[in-house]
Image (tube, rainbow, N blue to C red; front, side, top):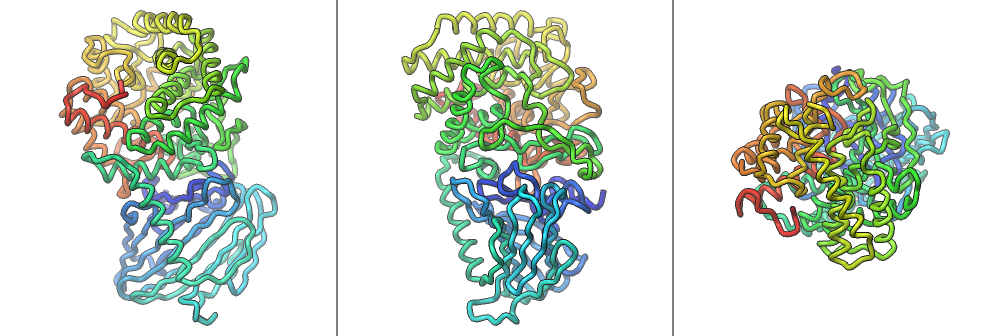
Length: 622
């Protein structure tokens, strides 16, 4: 257990094509290259012995460490406080741009701000999830790591000297250590040095501290310029802007695809089997991100994902198995074969360690509602569909009219068999409703009469079969007595009025069955077998949905208290994983896009209602 840091003891850095996690002890313990969904180079987060890592830390154990981001940037600072001095490691990745590339740079600048400190560098790459060997070449300018297979591009370590006038005697001395390298250097107040780990089979070269400083300034300038576009002026600026930057770090710039998380196989229960690979783009998660990004004024990012979504619809139009898969790789391809890394022990023994995702082939009818709602909101913000994309969208709405009444696997990707999930029917209603509105608002060709007839049929079925009078609530699936917090979306998307007695009764039932203090469970696995062993924590996304539902239902004080309590569960950097355990620990993949986009949406909507009254939503929002 002690060999693995807490999931929350990490910061995220990235260059908009891939990302890395840095722990509070100065270790890069997760990094995939050249993309989010590429094989790992560092994965000691999943196997402390075999996974590979890149550590820079003091040459002593009696330190205290703290992490922060430079204000309004994605530059991470890990501070080390020792009896002899205070040192810092600045970690960041210069922006890679919108063209896919194998060249990515991980920059680590070390400085001492008080006293004296000796730092050790230990670099141990392990390519292709530690399945591929590599050659190590050490030179006077750095080191080179050349993998035996083509699963990852090679890596080069470039070492910086104090200045352009420094001799080679000023450089740190690199020593071969097994399949990696080590080095040490002592710094005094005001002194700095740095290294750049670069992918793409470049030759090691000598850099200077001025080069590192220039890269740092350019990266800071990018993030502050990007954040300046935000229109958010509400009560929770720090949390909202950090969530926005976290989402930005998880969007693959060349295509606009947003990964659900940059990590794989971090467990929903320590030692359990609910360990999934989230380094892919879910239609659902990405669609919800449009709502969040538009709420902050980031129309470019929202438009980029809307284009990604329309491309997937165009590719799948007319496909007999359905117009859309539930998830794709960031480049839009759909090969997500699931396998287990049996040679990895998993984070704190949580196995299997899965890569790929077998849920990719599930039928989840809710994705059409989430996609159409996103495109409808984008259209209202000026991001209009082209003729070709409209024809593709109308094609999958026609398909939905024929198939909406079949059982599916549902939003939570259960592996216990298909059911008539109420949430799937809710999103079917949303899909048809938004398609009708788009067709009428933009005078686009569509079979509006058919769509309207099916929309009304779905509505009537939800209220007749989704409602369980014995429970006094809408339930997880037809004929069930199990509650499901996904149904918190019913009033948020306009299917039912927040003050409707049926909804008020449902909300009270959720209060009683799924809420623990301020935290919300997705559902009760013991009451609704999902085909998996073990339990799970509360779901952060659902807690933020709960905030919004409380506010719209007239319980503004409760909503604000729940929202404020949620801030205490974030890590010190303001980051959330997927779930929160019984003692407040973060569980699941980290950081989680779902959690952060829901935080943004809850903050924007709660701000508006606190200013204008419960249930009064911004223009264009149901």
